[in-house]
Amino acid sequence: MPGPKKLDPSSSPRALLGAELRHRREAAGLSQEDLGAPLFVSGSFIGQLEAGTRRMQADQAQRLDEALGSEGFFVRNCAAVSKSKYPDHFAEAAEAERQATAIKEYAPLLIPGLLQTEAYARAVFRGGLPTAPEESIDELVAARLERGHLLADPTTPLLWVVLDESVLRRVTGGHRVMAEALRHVERLARRHRVIVQVLPFTAGAHMALEGPLKLMSFADAPPLAYLQGLGTGQLRDDPATVRQYELTYDLVAASALSPKASLALIASVAEDYDHEDQHL
Image 1 (cartoon, rainbow, N blue to C red):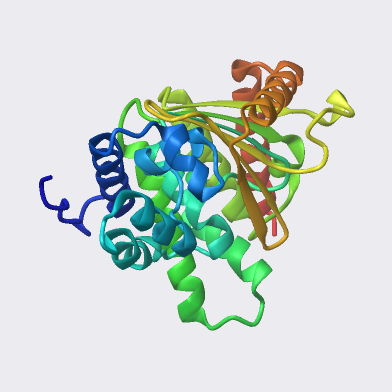
Image 2 (image 1 turned 60 degrees about the vertical axis):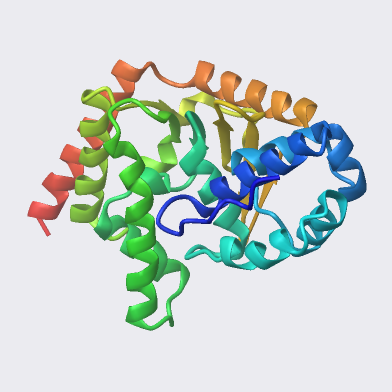
Protein backbone atom coordinates (compact mmCIF):
# COMPACT_ATOMS: atom_id res chain seq x y z
CA MET A 1 0.00 0.00 0.00
CA PRO A 2 1.35 3.49 -0.82
CA GLY A 3 2.45 5.59 2.14
CA PRO A 4 0.04 8.04 3.72
CA LYS A 5 -0.51 11.30 1.89
CA LYS A 6 1.28 14.26 3.41
CA LEU A 7 -1.14 16.75 4.95
CA ASP A 8 -0.52 20.24 3.60
CA PRO A 9 -1.66 22.85 6.16
CA SER A 10 -1.82 25.48 3.42
CA SER A 11 -4.63 23.53 1.75
CA SER A 12 -7.71 22.14 3.51
CA PRO A 13 -6.23 19.72 6.07
CA ARG A 14 -9.59 18.14 6.77
CA ALA A 15 -10.22 17.46 3.09
CA LEU A 16 -6.78 15.89 2.73
CA LEU A 17 -7.32 13.71 5.79
CA GLY A 18 -10.66 12.69 4.30
CA ALA A 19 -8.98 11.76 1.02
CA GLU A 20 -6.54 9.55 2.93
CA LEU A 21 -9.46 7.93 4.76
CA ARG A 22 -11.19 7.14 1.47
CA HIS A 23 -7.94 5.74 0.02
CA ARG A 24 -7.37 3.42 2.98
CA ARG A 25 -11.01 2.32 3.18
CA GLU A 26 -11.14 1.39 -0.51
CA ALA A 27 -7.77 -0.38 -0.25
CA ALA A 28 -9.23 -2.43 2.61
CA GLY A 29 -12.24 -3.36 0.47
CA LEU A 30 -14.73 -1.79 2.90
CA SER A 31 -17.90 0.12 2.09
CA GLN A 32 -18.70 3.29 3.97
CA GLU A 33 -21.35 1.37 5.89
CA ASP A 34 -18.83 -1.36 6.79
CA LEU A 35 -16.40 1.19 8.18
CA GLY A 36 -19.11 3.11 9.99
CA ALA A 37 -20.19 0.08 12.05
CA PRO A 38 -17.21 -0.05 14.48
CA LEU A 39 -17.47 3.74 14.90
CA PHE A 40 -21.22 3.53 15.64
CA VAL A 41 -21.92 6.02 12.85
CA SER A 42 -23.74 5.81 9.53
CA GLY A 43 -22.14 5.23 6.17
CA SER A 44 -23.18 8.74 5.19
CA PHE A 45 -21.15 10.10 8.12
CA ILE A 46 -18.07 8.26 6.82
CA GLY A 47 -18.77 9.85 3.45
CA GLN A 48 -18.84 13.28 5.09
CA LEU A 49 -15.51 12.59 6.82
CA GLU A 50 -14.05 11.58 3.47
CA ALA A 51 -15.39 14.72 1.80
CA GLY A 52 -13.99 16.92 4.56
CA THR A 53 -17.39 18.25 5.60
CA ARG A 54 -17.31 16.74 9.10
CA ARG A 55 -14.70 16.95 11.85
CA MET A 56 -13.01 13.72 12.90
CA GLN A 57 -13.14 13.27 16.68
CA ALA A 58 -10.29 11.71 18.67
CA ASP A 59 -12.22 8.55 19.59
CA GLN A 60 -13.26 8.10 15.96
CA ALA A 61 -9.64 8.47 14.83
CA GLN A 62 -8.59 5.71 17.23
CA ARG A 63 -11.29 3.35 15.96
CA LEU A 64 -10.37 4.14 12.35
CA ASP A 65 -6.75 3.25 13.03
CA GLU A 66 -7.89 -0.03 14.57
CA ALA A 67 -10.28 -0.87 11.74
CA LEU A 68 -7.88 0.08 8.93
CA GLY A 69 -4.58 -0.96 10.53
CA SER A 70 -3.19 2.52 9.90
CA GLU A 71 -0.76 2.43 12.84
CA GLY A 72 -1.93 5.61 14.54
CA PHE A 73 -2.04 7.77 11.40
CA PHE A 74 -5.49 9.20 12.07
CA VAL A 75 -4.85 9.75 15.78
CA ARG A 76 -1.63 11.63 14.99
CA ASN A 77 -3.26 13.90 12.45
CA CYS A 78 -6.69 14.32 14.00
CA ALA A 79 -5.62 16.87 16.63
CA ALA A 80 -3.86 19.15 14.15
CA VAL A 81 -6.75 19.00 11.69
CA SER A 82 -9.28 19.81 14.43
CA LYS A 83 -7.63 23.12 15.33
CA SER A 84 -9.84 26.06 14.39
CA LYS A 85 -10.01 29.83 14.78
CA TYR A 86 -13.75 29.51 15.35
CA PRO A 87 -15.64 28.65 18.56
CA ASP A 88 -16.01 24.90 19.11
CA HIS A 89 -19.75 24.94 18.44
CA PHE A 90 -19.23 26.54 15.00
CA ALA A 91 -15.85 25.14 13.88
CA GLU A 92 -17.27 22.11 12.10
CA ALA A 93 -19.96 24.17 10.37
CA ALA A 94 -17.35 26.71 9.20
CA GLU A 95 -15.30 23.95 7.57
CA ALA A 96 -18.40 22.49 5.95
CA GLU A 97 -19.28 25.96 4.65
CA ARG A 98 -15.95 26.06 2.79
CA GLN A 99 -16.73 22.77 1.05
CA ALA A 100 -20.36 23.55 0.19
CA THR A 101 -21.58 24.07 -3.36
CA ALA A 102 -24.81 25.69 -2.14
CA ILE A 103 -25.80 27.40 1.11
CA LYS A 104 -29.34 28.39 2.06
CA GLU A 105 -29.83 30.37 5.24
CA TYR A 106 -32.74 31.83 7.17
CA ALA A 107 -31.57 34.64 9.46
CA PRO A 108 -34.12 35.83 12.05
CA LEU A 109 -32.03 38.38 13.97
CA LEU A 110 -28.73 39.33 12.31
CA ILE A 111 -27.21 39.65 8.86
CA PRO A 112 -25.51 36.27 8.21
CA GLY A 113 -21.77 36.15 8.88
CA LEU A 114 -20.88 35.64 5.20
CA LEU A 115 -22.54 38.97 4.36
CA GLN A 116 -21.39 41.12 7.28
CA THR A 117 -19.24 44.23 6.95
CA GLU A 118 -16.36 44.84 9.34
CA ALA A 119 -18.19 47.52 11.33
CA TYR A 120 -21.34 45.43 11.61
CA ALA A 121 -19.40 42.32 12.70
CA ARG A 122 -17.54 44.36 15.30
CA ALA A 123 -20.82 45.67 16.71
CA VAL A 124 -22.22 42.13 16.87
CA PHE A 125 -19.21 40.73 18.72
CA ARG A 126 -18.92 43.68 21.07
CA GLY A 127 -22.61 43.39 21.90
CA GLY A 128 -22.23 39.69 22.68
CA LEU A 129 -18.92 40.05 24.54
CA PRO A 130 -19.14 43.41 26.33
CA THR A 131 -16.09 42.80 28.57
CA ALA A 132 -13.78 41.09 26.05
CA PRO A 133 -10.37 42.68 25.33
CA GLU A 134 -10.20 44.59 22.07
CA GLU A 135 -7.62 42.12 20.76
CA SER A 136 -10.11 39.27 21.15
CA ILE A 137 -12.77 41.20 19.26
CA ASP A 138 -10.23 41.95 16.51
CA GLU A 139 -9.51 38.23 16.11
CA LEU A 140 -13.19 37.34 15.91
CA VAL A 141 -13.88 40.06 13.35
CA ALA A 142 -10.91 38.97 11.21
CA ALA A 143 -12.12 35.36 11.22
CA ARG A 144 -15.62 36.41 10.23
CA LEU A 145 -14.39 38.60 7.36
CA GLU A 146 -12.20 35.73 6.17
CA ARG A 147 -15.33 33.59 5.87
CA GLY A 148 -16.75 36.22 3.52
CA HIS A 149 -13.90 35.54 1.08
CA LEU A 150 -15.94 32.54 -0.08
CA LEU A 151 -17.94 35.01 -2.13
CA ALA A 152 -14.86 36.06 -4.10
CA ASP A 153 -15.60 33.13 -6.38
CA PRO A 154 -18.18 34.43 -8.89
CA THR A 155 -20.48 31.41 -8.75
CA THR A 156 -19.67 28.93 -5.96
CA PRO A 157 -21.11 28.48 -3.47
CA LEU A 158 -24.62 29.47 -4.46
CA LEU A 159 -25.82 31.57 -1.52
CA TRP A 160 -29.54 32.10 -0.95
CA VAL A 161 -30.50 34.04 2.18
CA VAL A 162 -33.88 34.87 3.68
CA LEU A 163 -33.64 37.76 6.12
CA ASP A 164 -36.38 38.35 8.63
CA GLU A 165 -37.52 41.97 8.54
CA SER A 166 -36.24 42.31 12.10
CA VAL A 167 -32.69 41.97 10.68
CA LEU A 168 -33.26 45.20 8.78
CA ARG A 169 -34.87 47.01 11.69
CA ARG A 170 -32.49 46.03 14.50
CA VAL A 171 -30.08 48.96 14.82
CA THR A 172 -26.78 47.12 15.26
CA GLY A 173 -23.84 49.48 15.64
CA GLY A 174 -25.82 52.63 14.86
CA HIS A 175 -27.53 54.12 11.83
CA ARG A 176 -24.36 54.59 9.76
CA VAL A 177 -23.22 51.00 10.36
CA MET A 178 -26.64 49.69 9.42
CA ALA A 179 -26.79 51.73 6.22
CA GLU A 180 -23.37 50.44 5.16
CA ALA A 181 -24.25 46.84 6.07
CA LEU A 182 -27.54 46.82 4.16
CA ARG A 183 -25.97 48.45 1.11
CA HIS A 184 -23.29 45.74 1.13
CA VAL A 185 -26.00 43.08 1.01
CA GLU A 186 -27.81 45.03 -1.70
CA ARG A 187 -24.67 45.30 -3.86
CA LEU A 188 -23.98 41.59 -3.67
CA ALA A 189 -27.55 40.83 -4.67
CA ARG A 190 -27.56 43.33 -7.56
CA ARG A 191 -24.32 41.76 -8.82
CA HIS A 192 -26.20 38.43 -8.82
CA ARG A 193 -23.69 36.93 -6.40
CA VAL A 194 -26.34 36.10 -3.80
CA ILE A 195 -30.09 35.65 -3.74
CA VAL A 196 -31.71 37.69 -0.97
CA GLN A 197 -35.30 37.72 0.20
CA VAL A 198 -36.91 39.50 3.12
CA LEU A 199 -39.58 37.81 5.23
CA PRO A 200 -41.83 40.73 6.25
CA PHE A 201 -43.49 41.10 9.63
CA THR A 202 -46.83 40.76 7.84
CA ALA A 203 -45.99 37.14 6.97
CA GLY A 204 -46.98 36.25 10.53
CA ALA A 205 -46.22 32.86 12.06
CA HIS A 206 -44.04 30.45 10.10
CA MET A 207 -42.13 27.17 10.50
CA ALA A 208 -38.77 28.72 11.48
CA LEU A 209 -39.95 30.87 14.37
CA GLU A 210 -37.73 28.95 16.80
CA GLY A 211 -34.43 30.12 15.33
CA PRO A 212 -31.91 30.37 12.49
CA LEU A 213 -31.37 27.64 9.93
CA LYS A 214 -28.50 26.95 7.53
CA LEU A 215 -28.61 24.24 4.86
CA MET A 216 -25.47 23.15 3.00
CA SER A 217 -25.18 20.97 -0.10
CA PHE A 218 -22.02 19.32 -1.41
CA ALA A 219 -20.74 17.84 -4.64
CA ASP A 220 -19.74 14.48 -3.14
CA ALA A 221 -21.41 14.23 0.28
CA PRO A 222 -24.94 14.27 1.69
CA PRO A 223 -26.45 17.64 2.68
CA LEU A 224 -26.21 19.05 6.19
CA ALA A 225 -28.36 21.31 8.32
CA TYR A 226 -26.84 23.60 10.94
CA LEU A 227 -28.88 24.85 13.89
CA GLN A 228 -27.53 27.56 16.18
CA GLY A 229 -28.55 28.73 19.63
CA LEU A 230 -27.06 30.86 22.38
CA GLY A 231 -23.42 29.70 22.49
CA THR A 232 -24.35 26.37 20.92
CA GLY A 233 -24.65 24.84 17.50
CA GLN A 234 -25.15 21.43 15.94
CA LEU A 235 -24.86 19.85 12.51
CA ARG A 236 -27.63 17.46 11.56
CA ASP A 237 -27.07 14.86 8.85
CA ASP A 238 -29.95 12.41 9.24
CA PRO A 239 -31.56 12.41 5.76
CA ALA A 240 -35.15 12.55 7.02
CA THR A 241 -34.31 15.37 9.42
CA VAL A 242 -32.48 17.36 6.74
CA ARG A 243 -35.42 16.94 4.37
CA GLN A 244 -37.73 18.37 7.02
CA TYR A 245 -35.47 21.41 7.42
CA GLU A 246 -35.36 21.80 3.64
CA LEU A 247 -39.15 21.90 3.62
CA THR A 248 -39.06 24.48 6.40
CA TYR A 249 -36.71 26.69 4.40
CA ASP A 250 -38.77 26.32 1.22
CA LEU A 251 -41.95 27.39 3.01
CA VAL A 252 -40.22 30.35 4.64
CA ALA A 253 -38.86 31.45 1.26
CA ALA A 254 -42.31 31.05 -0.28
CA SER A 255 -43.73 33.44 2.34
CA ALA A 256 -40.98 36.02 1.78
CA LEU A 257 -41.00 38.97 -0.60
CA SER A 258 -39.67 38.38 -4.09
CA PRO A 259 -35.96 39.12 -4.62
CA LYS A 260 -36.88 42.31 -6.51
CA ALA A 261 -39.25 43.55 -3.80
CA SER A 262 -36.75 42.53 -1.12
CA LEU A 263 -33.98 44.61 -2.71
CA ALA A 264 -36.29 47.59 -2.92
CA LEU A 265 -37.09 47.27 0.79
CA ILE A 266 -33.42 46.84 1.77
CA ALA A 267 -32.46 49.94 -0.25
CA SER A 268 -35.30 51.95 1.29
CA VAL A 269 -34.36 51.01 4.86
CA ALA A 270 -30.68 51.81 4.16
CA GLU A 271 -31.73 55.21 2.85
CA ASP A 272 -33.78 55.80 6.00
CA TYR A 273 -30.72 55.00 8.13
CA ASP A 274 -28.63 57.45 6.12
CA HIS A 275 -31.26 60.14 6.58
CA GLU A 276 -31.50 59.51 10.33
CA ASP A 277 -27.70 59.57 10.68
CA GLN A 278 -27.51 62.97 8.98
CA HIS A 279 -30.03 64.44 11.42
CA LEU A 280 -28.39 63.24 14.62
